[in-house]
Amino acid sequence: STAVLLKPTLPLPTTTGMTVRMRSFQWMLMTCGLAMGEDQCQSISVDERVDCLQMYQDSCESAGCCWGPVQRPSGPNPPWCFYKDRKILNCTLGADPKRPFSDAELDQVMKLFELNLDVQGTGQVVASPDHKTGPGGDYYFAWARDGALSMNAYLQTKPFPQSDEKMEKWIQSLEKAQHESDPNGIDVLVEPKFLIPEGTPFTGAWCRPQNDAPGLRSITAMSYAAKKPSVNDRVWSLVKQNLDWVVANYSSSTCDLWEEVRSEDFFWNRYTMRKALLMGSDFAKTVGKDQGRADQYQQTAQAVTQTLSQHVINDYVIESTNRQKDTAVIEAFNVGDMEDGLFAPLSKEAVTTMAGLSQLYCRSFAINQQAAQSGVPGVLFGRYEGDSYDGGNPWVLLTASAATLLYRQALQAAKTPPTGEVAQILGNLLGRTPTAQNLLGAGDAVMLLMKKYLVNGMHMNEQIDRNSGKMTSAQDLTWNYANVLKAMKARAAAAAAAVENSVQI
Image (tube, rainbow, N blue to C red; front, top):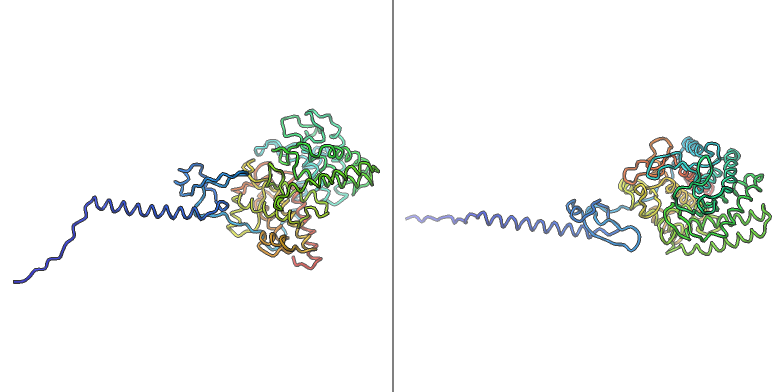
């Protein structure tokens, strides 16, 4: 007989068995995926987080993002919901020099600037001709601070005597305003803003007093007198009224530069007051023939100088204890410098503060991250850490101020190249050796990135939307034009020094 070998057969799996194994497989995949996701989340440091824009844990995880609450003792918290596959990029300022604005473009900027000076023939400076754009509402007022800074910029950037007519009208407006009775229960010298064309103090609710104006007015008026000695006596009459107030009140409570918080000790106020007092001491001796006031102003300047070290923490300069990371400090470096070495452009304090704020805004604004992603150098600067006004955006005037400091650093580097820690900090910021040429290129990169978002000729709104890059808030802000013109003047000086010192640009 023939043996028959039968092929063994396996039992068919039951439906129940298949289901169990499938679910087990799915669970393994899910567990593996969760583990990988957790690993991805944990690999992103707190400072590298990119906001996933979800407010709750359920919606965050449903969006495929990481959830990790962090509560910092001060300042804004990092995102709690963040992307697992993205990290904050570092911005670079490393770039070759490229002039940001042509002569023709700067002529347009100057014309727009001049439209806001001596408005309605009053000598006043309007903050903006805009009555309604943005959450700030009507900007058609003469802010004391803006006026003093703008007329100083005009004096610096418009050849004299072409600037004389508008400067004279501004002095006349001060002579009127400083003798107005004050309806708000404070000294008229520290009123924040005035009506146009009346020239009387604004009486609505506002952050008062604002103590920086007396010093800023004095600086500009004395600078004008230096170009036109025939106004010396009139300017002295104005200046001594302002500086006498500073002597008596420099440490009194005031609103900040942005009209939001109060302190008795803002760096912006102290550093610019110091300049006004030092200039005023010389002016009192040479013009006022008043040795008593000259000594008093000098002594007060020394007292103010002694307080400035309280603003330096690990070489970083804070605006105040309640507003630490603030670009008002950069603006102060530019406006208040007496060229006596204190907070000089290449001082460790100025360089550390510039690097710190650059990193802050690089990480804060999507349009800065977009530039970094695309390999475009430059950083747009905002007001301060955690700003939320109109969304908390980059500001044109502060971006120009940052560029101005970089140009001033280039000017100093052309004469004395940075060394040691200063060179190291700047090298990290630029990604290049901090030569005069590279610092010039860094300033250009900042200005060119800002200019990229100008879509209506040289018209400039107060802010640039942090996400879309659209111009937003008050239109044709006077302070914008003032700072852009000053930046380009600083650039011209740096470029000339580089050529003189045989640095290729």
